[in-house]
Length: 434
Image 1 (tube, helix red, strand yellow):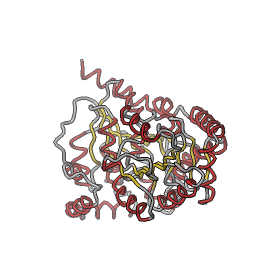
Image 2 (image 1 turned 180 degrees about the vertical axis):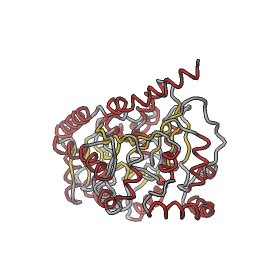
Image 3 (image 1 turned 90 degrees about the vertical axis):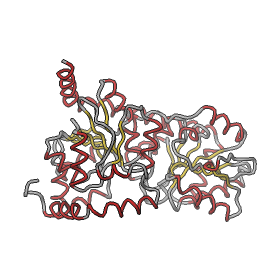
Image 4 (image 1 turned 90 degrees about the horizontal axis):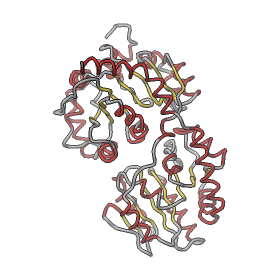
């Protein structure tokens, strides 16, 4: 690696190399926290028993569920070109979603810990032909080692949040040395493009947000029919992808709304399923009736709150109710992606903290396709209007659908920008076949 690297990266590389022997300790701790798959911990050290397929291989990396789902349609288009895909991510949840929703020929691996030794093993084994990094999950040793091997790298669906940008500005030489090694940066918006340019990216193209082009999530028709049969006639609110601190607010909101809608059922889908038991205990302690999906319980006529602590079933619950509260927005997490809910006919209510999807929520709010609640009182008011006024709810749904259709198209723009790289891979495949 060239000595022109800034001091921060040189120190980082040395420390990450020295600390590599402590990986088993880290893995053990993460196993206790259910953050690792005990059968696949070797992948964190760049070790795998999965064979590399022959021919060109596109490596796509995303941090977790949202990122990998954002590229589902892109992956389908690449598969149509007979290009093999290696998809890496960093969370157990994302691995489960990939296994459930992606084709069997997609190779998934956990991203190795960012130590030079582990990264070298990973790259030696897989020898990718092209690397696509989703949004901004950039690991220094991965980027530097890949660049040193002359691996073409493209940042796709690039996003630089208002929180991350000033932090990186204070480390401009560090981030510049990393972003400058990408051949191309495909940014979600003009604002993101300006931020990436200020931090050292080159060859920037604004392609839009791939999350606007995601397909509606699937569901099991038999499970939906069962849920609808036990909730038929009841008003239902779905609180999607909730985070710590939100469930208590939602419970109080439910109690207030239940005085106007006596048979109200609130479905809470926590962002991290392992929190389900704790949420259920909190609800039960207040005297409310709660059922837990991970125990294979279904809501009964007296259930107040149904905690849906399972993975991969959001498509089921979005179809259960046209009123959806998007979590991660009452607390400063940054909000969750509302697009899947919109595509399944939901009216959206959200809190004030949506900086991870600023452009999307601004467009939805301006058109009346979503409503913001900055206080508990407003949350009650907004959800109550959606429950009690079908005309208002339908108008909101229609406006949201129009916004999503207008803002779409990122997939085609991304493919157009990647076309030179994909043509090269196809030429390589043709030479191999010959």
